[in-house]
Length: 149
Image (cartoon, rainbow, N blue to C red; front, side, top):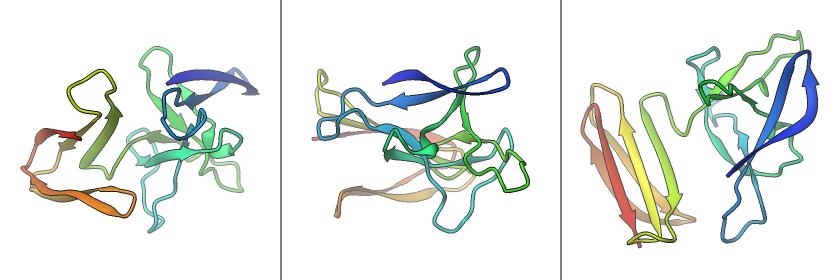
């Protein structure tokens, strides 16, 4: 991925797009913030909302990046009264986090890493489009790496 500055600024705050550079099917898509289906999520420095791939021209593709910590956040959910409602980038619900990566030079083409921060086990399913590839459970406070062909 590349973190690309965009011309838009608010005061001293610069904004960036996070552009995926090696996707096999899409031409340079951006990470965009995505509203949870149940209108859930939490605002503030520890709040979060999931991300997905989308158009770089979308306002949802505008990110603040803290150049010291590397943390990305968005004010996409700002309200009409001007309240920013800043949320951090996350890839799952607050206790079950997931990241997936293409590994073209590795043993297998895809790697999925799952982190369960909760005190309880969590069940999950991994889908490739409409096909379920894996269903499993992850123990409390653990991390799993899944290699997919």
